[in-house]
Image (cartoon, rainbow, N blue to C red):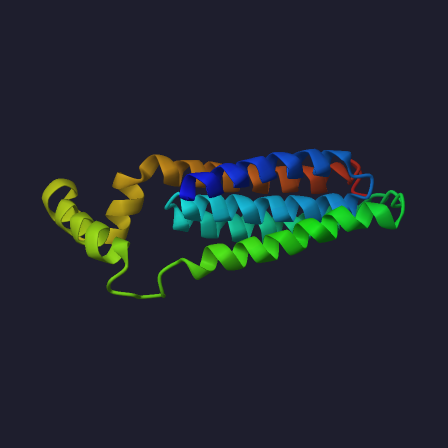
Length: 179
């Protein structure tokens, strides 16, 4: 069941990428990319990387969408081809809402002591932290040792996005300080 859902999400992500590339309306492209980011986060949650999923939702969908809209407002927005162009975006957004509701309904309740991560993974990390890492803080041990490559990748993505935003903002200014 999960494999089928994951494969379906991969297929939908591929379709969304093509739709985003074909958009003439830049705001519509931002909407499609936001849905793409949300579906990526759902896929990450299905794969068990809930922390990475939350990072994707907050950075990939929320902050990046706002920055893209700000960038579009500084440039020219192409006129939409008509109402037929808005329908696929609305359908994809509605599909996202349904899919997100389906995915979140299967997640364990917050702070559920009988959730699989609380029963199996957390005790193992606590023991491994004391025996193997010798760091008193379990969260630091998980982020800095057990998942260090993941943390490095997330940090690299955030740094690269920040630098791209700075470069894009600096590009609009001339060397004499006038926009």
